[in-house]
Image (cartoon, rainbow, N blue to C red):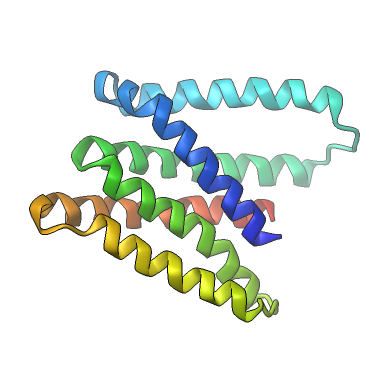
Length: 162
């Protein structure tokens, strides 16, 4: 299940790249994050009408905690994009967001198949081959630094919900 959630998260990060990267180049990062969260909150509110269930205080607390971590994660993400390149920051983040829940599951006692570990290895090698280029110089390391700040924030947010 964690691989599915990680994959979906990676997909949605790619879609956000498409729409939000140009906005962050023209607007303040906090403005972009607040706008994204207000929009997401409205979608979630509409979604509660169609999804049956009981909303408890614990659910609200976990959702609020997840939102706070995701807000920090998005700030680091957009800051990384402004200071480096989407081609460096986004793949690192997509990979980490897919892997952190998997590692959390392993620590929690799950035993993924060998095929999952082959996929992890292929993803890491592919990432290294596609993002690290001598032509980019310091931009690569700047992007890596911002991406590494983001991953724990988003992974913490997702582990609260899982």
